[in-house]
Image 1 (tube, rainbow, N blue to C red):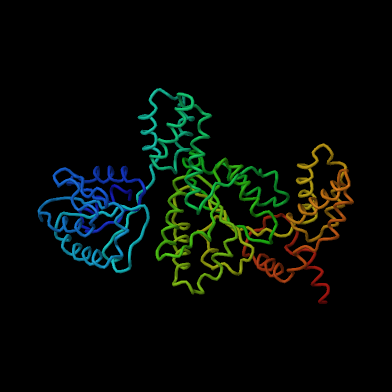
Image 2 (image 1 turned 135 degrees about the vertical axis):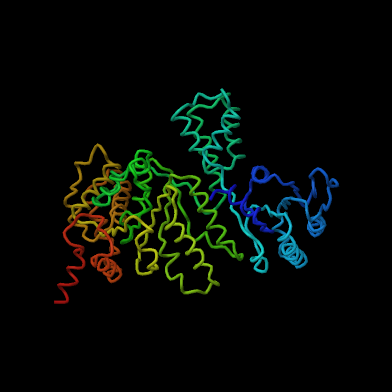
Length: 503
């Protein structure tokens, strides 16, 4: 049910107190006026009631008097009362009591009170009386109408380019869309394809202000991933899954991917490569920032994150190392906040219809709640193991190919891969950097021997955390996840040595 239909239903059902969460006051009030033909009265703390037919500035700086005005209104008058920023007064005992008395009375009268606020802050004693509504960001059709109204013939963008402009604007408030378009026109007198970067920058600014999501640069390609051939094949087959052609075929939007495995094996790199290959914006979710100190604020941040991600769809939502945040979240100790945030996130993942592809990574699958791993949350769960010798050759080739593209043959990649058993991709990158420091300090280029010297000085994580990694590998070997690499068997050379030592 869309916003207009839901609001109309609640008004006709005589819900007395509604709470509308939106920072777009003007647009929200226009939407309320379109939904109902009832008289509209608007109040704020500075100006009081400004609606025609009331004393100018009535109940200015007096929220209790603003409620008394509603109480004294004729019982037969059909009206909607919009109270701007009224969430700031809800903790006051007199205001809370007055609202509860008013709610009882308005159930039998054709009147509705709407609290319009930029954030959700409902005290527990009013939770039963207030119904919360989320006001959505403007949809594509609304943005397109606004572009036509603002620009008219001052743009050459038509057809597909016009669709790209509308898509770029999605996720912004209508006011920010106007500001971005006005900035482009002020710079060049018209809107061209090159001006889309201005709108994208406005979108980045908006996302930065949430302090929950951030635009993440997606410059890594699928070719930058060494190994993981089965995972890459899976991604390549779904490259066009967000297209209209896929919808006509009957394919649902891809839901997401959970990457579980050893640290430093390319899970985060894969998330960036997915967004780059699919030409989708990459949003990085800092799950820890969902949690806040005030009661109800964590849940509100979660809903805000979901709303923004869906407004920016199609996109890739990257949740890195979720095991550190949601691991053991059922243990309690925070009045159930973590459980409620987790439940909201899980419900959205299971029921979402918007094209938001969630890529989550985890290093310790044993800390993840089982609800997260069941089918329906993600399209697939992949296990990313330590690279095989052939995959290590590919990883060395990728890194050395970027650093020394014209001198790659000078390095013995086969020997480097052979001498680095149990090394992760991140550790391979570090030994190359260490070798570069050696060569730079001696005023020469680094060599294969420099890399091997660096290898000899590093003890890989697979040896310092052997038991943890072995438990992960055994979990994957039991058929709990799909292999990211096409390799004979799951056990690394480390595990084979451990088994040999036990015999």
